[in-house]
Image 1: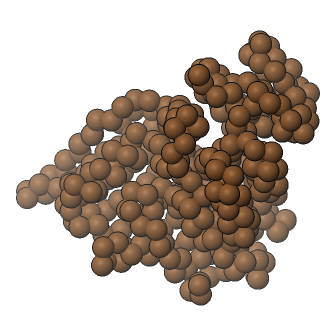
Image 2: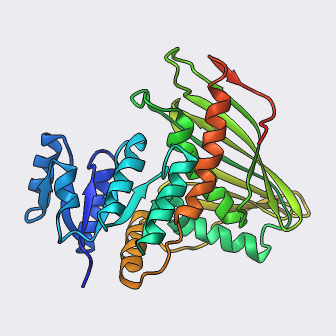
Length: 328
């Protein structure tokens, strides 16, 4: 029997979680404080219970797990209350804004033998997993550099920096494909272009210690780019992989050059399954088997730790926020 989950927050991203859990027969309750959103959920998912109070979800005995898709500042308190109520938890990235909070949530889940999963979506992306396998097989040769660009035009997100919104995807994905748990930030820069104290353009220069070597990398994030960019580039001595997730087809391409200097492009095959479907399916499987999720609190801890350090650094200087080495 599929465990029933409650999705808390059915905004731009939460509605996608609602859709996927509903398709897998696991949606029991939808919770949101906005009556218009709840009315829409009633119409789209007849028979599914709706609630405008989070407390009603916590006390619902039929709900075995709570899926949290609310603003990131609320992730820690909502996840903590859920775990204390004996509910399994899936929480969207980032797990928390404070390293101590991430540790506390992990401890609570372990003490109560509950599943705690973080929504690092790209670790379930078929193209990302295909690329990970190609790297492991040596298809790209010796890795030289890795860069992730994630940019769009989004002036509506004004309550935290662009790094907390976008960089969790980049950091979790890059560490995953490289099998690296000790990512180091070498340099950081960020700009508050609107003059409101919120960093909306930023970059991170990184080092990835991998099997005795150090692979350099970079993350570039922006909320003021009118052209959406979702691109990962992995340069190798034999081939360069480009994963362009903004494309509908041929997202993953391998570029190489023949001895005559001719450029060759290959398109590896991978399953055409929605990553979010696979992520939600994995969560439900963990509820059934009790296995620890691929994207557990340990996986999320590094992201929270790095971004907390970066945020502290960026908060020291306004406008041209920070450059130079980041001491860890």
